[in-house]
Image (cartoon, rainbow, N blue to C red):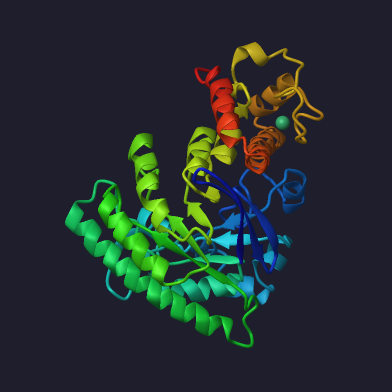
Length: 378
Ligand SMILES: [Zn+2]
């Protein structure tokens, strides 16, 4: 159940009640692809860096270790020892981007596993069964994410199929939630809006799926090659046609600036691999922009990554030490950088919620963007 607490322009401040606790929005979900955040980050670590929602990947967990095994182990929450909300994606995005030799039919997609080449079929019902076995808090509908370069007629046909698939997802989720041996019988389902960069197709689709009464609504297929301006334009056109009283999720986005722009356009949920991936490469977010710890000037820099940061890396270690760890390829170096970056994102979301509560989001956004612009060059 979503409660809209406050609005400033189109920006929403909300609370999403789930069987695994309340999610304060806007929120950034921390991406743990194969039920772990890359960079040796444990669920115990997540508790110390303000993580509200962990995101796991249906395709990866289906291929390895297998969702039946996760179910046998009591579901993802027990398996990875995390009792807060988990969102699983539908597997669709990976099937379309990672798997080879895929064939899209009305019933679903045939493809080969990227791990062992084994032939797999996934359609709406299979995706729902896998996510039900994983027992996540929020499941995502199985959709096709057409390329941002796909032509209009392809996108139109694809979106219509995605709508039919959503009907099948909803029906199957209802059936699974009614079964005795389902681990999370309160699993929720989010729909996904598609339509590439065609605003009219997006709007039509948004209206169709809004009528179908899902628990939340995602905007998918953005940040896949179009410009930031195109992405913001699509959000401006599409989000007003999604239900205000349900959470809105912008999938796979993005930089701190993208997030601030998304919040302004009414987005509640975000996820992105940037903070963890950049952290593993020594690229760190600070309130003065991004810094690259491999830069020689940090060799004898005794300051923390960011003065005043409360993350486990900054509370104890210097830039010089972490730089040394990264150069020596010590796992601890990556881990500390990933922790700092996730903490930075999670703290920014906390600031955004606080600014919305106080009715000063517009001023906060302007100030934050100006400060972060300083160091972008590094
Ligand atoms: Zn820090």
